[in-house]
Image (cartoon, rainbow over all chains, first blue to last red; front, side):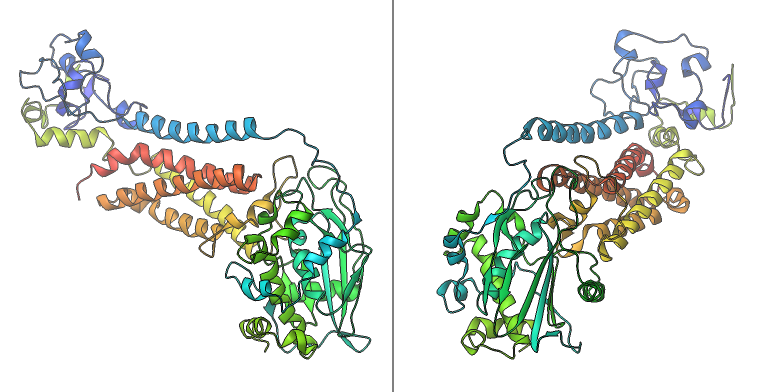
Length: 357
Length: 179
């Protein structure tokens, strides 16, 4: 360390003369090449004092006017060393993230009565009556086709899916699935315009999924009859019995035809294994849900049903708006039958929007 | 001790002014930003972030069917990568990450670290600050909106954080260069 490189250490600012640390506080390669304090290098006694050894100016900032050994200028501009900058920048981010984690952990609710395995109970007739909103109802027109929705997808030119001489639609979902939970409200509303369900159950999606415990129906054990089409709803996976999908199992296996159609059309739309999946006659498809299920968070069955009266409510926008699209999808495979449903202006609009009119 | 006299006489003049500024630049390693650990680390971190972002982007557009993620309490890559917060203005956040890290790889190439163009240093700083702010938002979204953590995303966040610290700490030296 006795030799100073040419043209380098000789030009130190005054800060180093007075014992100032080099700016690269980390002691990198540059620092290691630095000379000792210039006063030593020039044979002068070290000029150390309380005022200059601590808090003095950084190198290059202490251009003392009073000579080489003059104390550093008070109020001279300071420059942070790289180590200081690294420490400050890292510290700010770490403090913010740690604060987030603390608030999340401290503020998270403990075990609640909701964190129990959902049960299936027969659907309330009064709730069903509120859900079975006819297409001519003012709220159906007023809810319209909100832009916040994810409309069904159309794939033309495919072989029609038929069963017993009727066009067929099938649904694949899971009882644990919150997106399926939200979609079922609209499915029940739309298909009720063409026929009737029997054996619908009330339940919630998994309390351990996200968003948790969305109140809904289950198609498990339910049936649907219509003179216009066949609808086969399948809950292929059960609900959870604990965190991390604990206890989730196959509830109703898919037929090989359903399984292959699901794979074929989901792949076509670059979405694989996403629930729910609804195939309307191999022509119109719902893959992964039409609206954000979080708008149903915290609402029980009766509260959700009650909100369907107000077309401006986000719940009605999501459910009734989706049902409008689904109604148009059904009309596209029933040959626009019945006319009382399929000729409604909102259905015509939805058909135009989907490109199936 | 001895001092090499080459160029020393005038440099030691107390009223050098601009020459003292030159010394500052050299103090910060003006001539040593080539094969040092910081540029190399920045490039490696950018490549790591790019790789994870590419993986998440592919998974996003293939339905997350092969997303490898441990199933432990509070961790759900599926929930995070399929959440409403996984899209920003209709664009996948994973894709935005891929674009960002592609740019970071470019701007952290050795030639970009050696350049004397100040705007490169400023651009690099702006990019990491913006990315760090976005990462903080994403962490907030994971903790409070989605209520699940995605470990792959956390890997990207960590790479961004380390890049942020690295670039911020290097910035004084880089910005002090002569255009």
